[in-house]
Image (cartoon, rainbow, N blue to C red; front, side, top):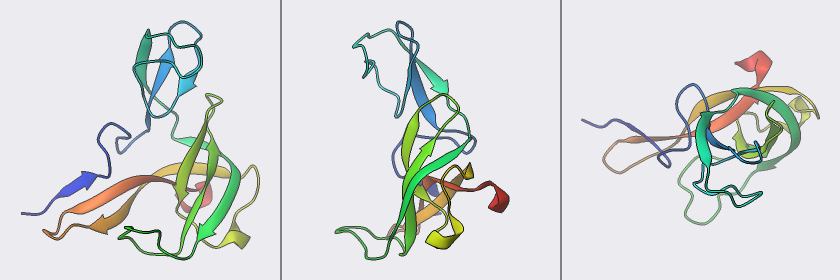
Length: 132
């Protein structure tokens, strides 16, 4: 029986993104890594990142990239989380007139495509908070 699988293991849960926090410099990063990308320390703790943020940049993808099996158009942008981390992300809104700088955003798990065996592949996305 087909199921659901994430586009990549270890990036997110239904409730939050999975990031890292450096025990040395205390900075967050995404995706989680065993080495801090800022100071090089290997003392890194896996953490649940906030499921809300603010929109910093956005565009709409209207033509499918090579190898992409999902639907277009879709939004694509940068969301800043309360941890001070800016995440490059898919956006659940592709109508650019409905997006604005500093807009409140909420994490959403969205369908990406369906595998040949019927398994649904999902990814993380952010949607305007009023849509969540």
